Length: 485
Image (cartoon, rainbow, N blue to C red):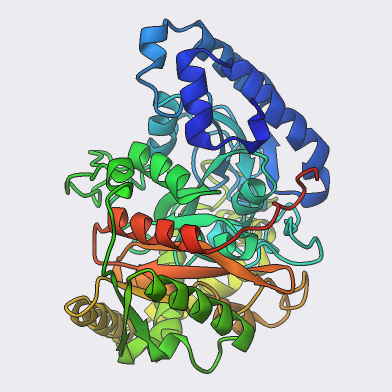
């Protein structure tokens, strides 16, 4: 068995039946992490001893118990804004450097209970605020396909880890595209579930009405495998949904003929690199040849999405991040009085992008501006949601490029935040509307990955996975980056 060429599902099956030990699997991936991550910096912390101990515990279980573990022995990377109890959780910020949580996030608990082995925490833009993973307090992550390019963000560390095969599966979080955009930039699969589909308990909040935890994987099937495990109602999360969870893997096998794909002009015009548009349209042509239908649709309020998002998300962040004040936990600056303690801790502990967004959000919520900015943004959000509801009366899914461009150069946008924010133009609408969306590899432009995004109605994850599987069947993938020839 070539462990590094084996899918997460195949690894779990081999461990369940005893063909290979979980400890062997974990050791193979830990060795690869040691060899490759020094240059990529996809990971912030690695738990070698804990991962081996967890693997040995799995190997010691009676065979009957192992057979009930859908992720038996599968190494898992967890984005470092999702709480784990053995590894520190920093959210990519100096203000939480060295913080250890006394409990785990529900999504991590469920993955571990299903047999997954947490091997590392993934790098990210500080508190999830960024589209390049350059805003981490601990240094940027490099794209495995081109080390002078960004991996996307904010889940750039986990996405790069999957692309470089440092682990078969990862958990990321998505507030405005933070799973899907790095998935596109790294040439992997990333899925943002419906808001409430996966518990947010244990996720360090950025924007509570937008945040979602979701899977990153090399294939649609592996993404569905992890999503199956982490989905479902959680009493510890008031926004968690009681909607029944579909059998994603079983439904993946259902034939999908006559899929009606909505093609909105707003996502294929100005602002989208012509080469990216061409790759996505080529895939659509192949899907049509296989029996899918494309329907031109209109999502008229898309043009206001970035403006609405960058009012709503920073406004919620300004409230959520007020807890980081140097009093209860995390970094504490020197000060002579309480007010100075707050000011110094936040000034020294937060990076520039976090400060920018907190100030923007505080201004939008301040007296005299609340109605002018925040309330109007929420009205736009409702209009964007209505646009999608009207579209889904005509089509099954909506297709877009996941990102308007290929991965850009490291450092090329650090001093141009508005240009950086435009990287989210294709993804923020799904968060604003609370809808599920998946990014799947669509091809390459001069050796750099391009992603195709499907957005579906609420709780249509099974349909999105099936649509993503259709894309996998018509897109030929070259050799993975960093894999031995």
